[in-house]
Image 1 (cartoon, rainbow, N blue to C red):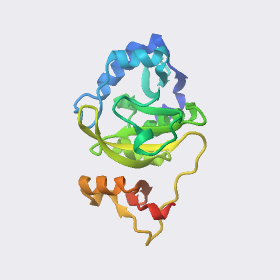
Image 2: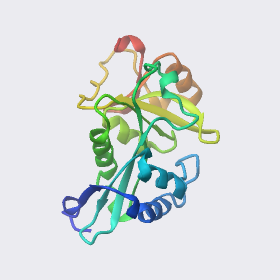
Image 3: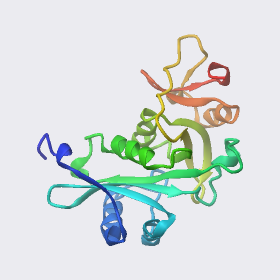
Length: 222
Protein backbone atom coordinates (compact mmCIF):
# COMPACT_ATOMS: atom_id res chain seq x y z
CA UNK A 1 0.00 0.00 0.00
CA UNK A 2 1.42 3.38 -0.95
CA UNK A 3 2.02 5.99 1.79
CA UNK A 4 -0.79 8.21 0.54
CA UNK A 5 -3.36 5.40 0.24
CA UNK A 6 -5.18 6.60 3.37
CA UNK A 7 -5.74 10.05 1.85
CA UNK A 8 -7.25 8.46 -1.27
CA UNK A 9 -10.00 6.66 0.62
CA UNK A 10 -13.58 7.64 -0.17
CA UNK A 11 -15.81 7.89 2.90
CA UNK A 12 -19.57 7.56 2.70
CA UNK A 13 -22.60 6.31 4.55
CA UNK A 14 -23.31 2.73 3.53
CA UNK A 15 -26.68 1.43 2.37
CA UNK A 16 -28.55 -1.84 1.85
CA UNK A 17 -26.62 -2.55 -1.36
CA UNK A 18 -23.44 -2.75 0.75
CA UNK A 19 -24.77 -5.42 3.13
CA UNK A 20 -22.86 -8.40 1.75
CA UNK A 21 -19.60 -6.46 1.48
CA UNK A 22 -19.88 -5.31 5.08
CA UNK A 23 -20.56 -8.83 6.31
CA UNK A 24 -17.70 -10.28 4.28
CA UNK A 25 -15.26 -7.71 5.73
CA UNK A 26 -16.54 -8.44 9.24
CA UNK A 27 -15.92 -12.19 8.81
CA UNK A 28 -12.41 -11.59 7.46
CA UNK A 29 -11.55 -9.19 10.26
CA UNK A 30 -12.52 -11.55 13.11
CA UNK A 31 -10.72 -14.62 11.76
CA UNK A 32 -8.67 -16.18 14.53
CA UNK A 33 -10.35 -14.12 17.26
CA UNK A 34 -12.60 -15.66 19.88
CA UNK A 35 -15.70 -14.21 21.58
CA UNK A 36 -13.51 -13.14 24.50
CA UNK A 37 -11.93 -10.59 22.13
CA UNK A 38 -14.61 -9.63 19.63
CA UNK A 39 -18.32 -10.16 19.18
CA UNK A 40 -19.28 -12.07 16.03
CA UNK A 41 -22.29 -10.54 14.30
CA UNK A 42 -24.90 -12.06 12.00
CA UNK A 43 -25.91 -10.94 8.54
CA UNK A 44 -29.28 -10.01 10.05
CA UNK A 45 -27.57 -7.60 12.47
CA UNK A 46 -26.16 -5.55 9.61
CA UNK A 47 -29.40 -5.86 7.64
CA UNK A 48 -31.39 -4.32 10.51
CA UNK A 49 -28.94 -1.44 10.86
CA UNK A 50 -29.09 -0.67 7.16
CA UNK A 51 -32.88 -0.82 7.39
CA UNK A 52 -33.07 2.01 9.92
CA UNK A 53 -31.84 0.66 13.29
CA UNK A 54 -28.66 2.71 12.98
CA UNK A 55 -26.06 3.98 10.56
CA UNK A 56 -22.91 2.46 9.08
CA UNK A 57 -20.10 4.56 7.69
CA UNK A 58 -17.50 3.06 5.40
CA UNK A 59 -14.28 3.78 3.52
CA UNK A 60 -13.59 2.49 0.02
CA UNK A 61 -10.25 2.37 -1.79
CA UNK A 62 -9.72 3.99 -5.21
CA UNK A 63 -10.96 0.78 -6.87
CA UNK A 64 -14.22 0.89 -4.91
CA UNK A 65 -13.42 -1.97 -2.51
CA UNK A 66 -14.74 -1.59 1.02
CA UNK A 67 -11.74 -1.50 3.37
CA UNK A 68 -13.28 -0.24 6.64
CA UNK A 69 -16.65 0.31 8.27
CA UNK A 70 -18.01 1.45 11.61
CA UNK A 71 -21.45 0.94 13.13
CA UNK A 72 -23.51 3.54 15.00
CA UNK A 73 -26.51 1.79 16.55
CA UNK A 74 -29.63 3.55 17.83
CA UNK A 75 -30.39 2.51 21.39
CA UNK A 76 -28.59 0.03 23.65
CA UNK A 77 -28.15 -3.65 22.96
CA UNK A 78 -30.42 -5.99 24.90
CA UNK A 79 -28.45 -6.97 27.99
CA UNK A 80 -26.36 -3.80 28.11
CA UNK A 81 -28.00 -0.98 30.02
CA UNK A 82 -25.63 1.99 30.26
CA UNK A 83 -28.55 4.21 31.24
CA UNK A 84 -29.06 2.18 34.42
CA UNK A 85 -25.44 1.33 35.14
CA UNK A 86 -24.24 4.91 34.71
CA UNK A 87 -27.23 6.81 36.03
CA UNK A 88 -28.10 8.48 32.74
CA UNK A 89 -31.46 10.34 32.46
CA UNK A 90 -34.41 8.03 31.88
CA UNK A 91 -35.19 9.78 28.60
CA UNK A 92 -31.57 9.93 27.38
CA UNK A 93 -30.97 9.51 23.67
CA UNK A 94 -28.55 6.55 23.61
CA UNK A 95 -26.43 5.50 20.66
CA UNK A 96 -23.79 2.80 20.56
CA UNK A 97 -20.57 2.47 18.63
CA UNK A 98 -21.37 -1.14 17.89
CA UNK A 99 -18.33 -2.52 16.16
CA UNK A 100 -16.01 -1.79 13.28
CA UNK A 101 -13.65 -3.65 10.96
CA UNK A 102 -10.58 -2.72 8.94
CA UNK A 103 -9.11 -4.78 6.10
CA UNK A 104 -5.77 -6.37 7.03
CA UNK A 105 -3.78 -4.38 4.47
CA UNK A 106 -5.03 -1.08 5.96
CA UNK A 107 -4.31 -1.84 9.62
CA UNK A 108 -1.78 0.30 11.41
CA UNK A 109 -3.03 3.44 9.63
CA UNK A 110 -5.15 4.71 12.56
CA UNK A 111 -8.34 3.88 10.71
CA UNK A 112 -9.98 2.65 13.93
CA UNK A 113 -9.49 6.09 15.44
CA UNK A 114 -10.89 7.69 12.29
CA UNK A 115 -13.94 5.42 12.42
CA UNK A 116 -14.59 6.47 16.01
CA UNK A 117 -14.26 10.17 15.16
CA UNK A 118 -16.61 9.89 12.21
CA UNK A 119 -19.24 7.99 14.17
CA UNK A 120 -19.14 10.52 17.00
CA UNK A 121 -19.66 13.25 14.38
CA UNK A 122 -22.52 11.24 12.86
CA UNK A 123 -24.30 10.79 16.21
CA UNK A 124 -27.19 12.96 17.32
CA UNK A 125 -25.75 16.08 18.99
CA UNK A 126 -27.47 15.39 22.33
CA UNK A 127 -26.78 11.66 22.42
CA UNK A 128 -25.15 9.68 25.18
CA UNK A 129 -22.64 7.43 23.47
CA UNK A 130 -21.21 4.15 24.62
CA UNK A 131 -19.18 1.23 23.36
CA UNK A 132 -17.94 -2.07 24.72
CA UNK A 133 -14.46 -3.55 24.38
CA UNK A 134 -12.87 -6.71 25.71
CA UNK A 135 -10.05 -6.22 28.25
CA UNK A 136 -8.09 -8.69 26.10
CA UNK A 137 -8.45 -6.38 23.07
CA UNK A 138 -6.43 -3.28 24.11
CA UNK A 139 -6.25 -1.91 20.58
CA UNK A 140 -10.02 -1.40 20.74
CA UNK A 141 -10.35 0.28 24.13
CA UNK A 142 -7.22 2.36 23.75
CA UNK A 143 -8.58 3.78 20.49
CA UNK A 144 -11.82 4.71 22.25
CA UNK A 145 -9.95 6.33 25.14
CA UNK A 146 -7.98 8.37 22.64
CA UNK A 147 -11.25 9.79 21.26
CA UNK A 148 -12.71 11.05 24.53
CA UNK A 149 -14.35 7.90 25.90
CA UNK A 150 -13.83 6.79 29.50
CA UNK A 151 -13.93 3.27 30.90
CA UNK A 152 -16.89 3.31 33.28
CA UNK A 153 -17.74 -0.31 34.11
CA UNK A 154 -16.61 -3.91 33.69
CA UNK A 155 -19.48 -6.26 32.94
CA UNK A 156 -20.24 -9.75 31.67
CA UNK A 157 -22.41 -9.40 28.56
CA UNK A 158 -22.79 -11.06 25.16
CA UNK A 159 -23.24 -14.62 26.40
CA UNK A 160 -21.20 -14.06 29.56
CA UNK A 161 -18.07 -12.54 28.03
CA UNK A 162 -16.18 -9.81 29.87
CA UNK A 163 -16.32 -6.28 28.46
CA UNK A 164 -15.38 -2.77 29.45
CA UNK A 165 -18.23 -0.29 29.09
CA UNK A 166 -16.91 3.03 27.75
CA UNK A 167 -18.95 6.22 27.49
CA UNK A 168 -18.88 9.88 26.43
CA UNK A 169 -21.29 12.54 25.21
CA UNK A 170 -21.75 13.32 21.52
CA UNK A 171 -20.61 16.57 19.94
CA UNK A 172 -17.30 18.42 20.24
CA UNK A 173 -15.53 17.59 23.47
CA UNK A 174 -12.01 18.06 24.72
CA UNK A 175 -10.23 14.93 25.82
CA UNK A 176 -10.00 14.56 29.62
CA UNK A 177 -6.84 16.10 31.03
CA UNK A 178 -4.14 13.65 31.97
CA UNK A 179 -4.33 12.94 35.71
CA UNK A 180 -1.93 15.01 37.78
CA UNK A 181 0.65 13.37 39.98
CA UNK A 182 -0.68 12.70 43.46
CA UNK A 183 -4.36 12.53 42.48
CA UNK A 184 -4.57 8.86 43.46
CA UNK A 185 -4.71 7.50 39.91
CA UNK A 186 -3.74 3.85 39.50
CA UNK A 187 -2.27 2.23 36.42
CA UNK A 188 -4.99 0.02 34.90
CA UNK A 189 -2.66 -2.71 33.67
CA UNK A 190 -1.28 -3.18 37.18
CA UNK A 191 -4.67 -4.14 38.64
CA UNK A 192 -6.46 -7.48 38.53
CA UNK A 193 -9.80 -7.57 36.73
CA UNK A 194 -11.54 -8.12 40.07
CA UNK A 195 -9.91 -4.99 41.49
CA UNK A 196 -10.74 -3.02 38.34
CA UNK A 197 -14.35 -4.11 38.68
CA UNK A 198 -14.47 -3.04 42.34
CA UNK A 199 -13.02 0.40 41.66
CA UNK A 200 -15.15 1.07 38.57
CA UNK A 201 -18.27 0.09 40.54
CA UNK A 202 -17.26 2.73 43.12
CA UNK A 203 -17.17 5.48 40.48
CA UNK A 204 -13.56 5.37 39.31
CA UNK A 205 -13.00 6.02 35.61
CA UNK A 206 -10.46 4.79 33.11
CA UNK A 207 -8.69 7.60 31.25
CA UNK A 208 -5.71 7.86 28.91
CA UNK A 209 -2.35 8.75 30.36
CA UNK A 210 1.24 8.86 29.10
CA UNK A 211 1.78 5.44 30.67
CA UNK A 212 -1.20 3.92 28.79
CA UNK A 213 -4.37 4.02 30.92
CA UNK A 214 -5.11 4.86 34.54
CA UNK A 215 -8.10 4.57 36.82
CA UNK A 216 -8.95 7.92 38.37
CA UNK A 217 -10.87 8.18 41.67
CA UNK A 218 -14.18 10.10 41.75
CA UNK A 219 -12.79 12.99 43.78
CA UNK A 220 -10.34 13.80 40.97
CA UNK A 221 -13.11 14.94 38.61
CA UNK A 222 -16.13 15.75 40.75
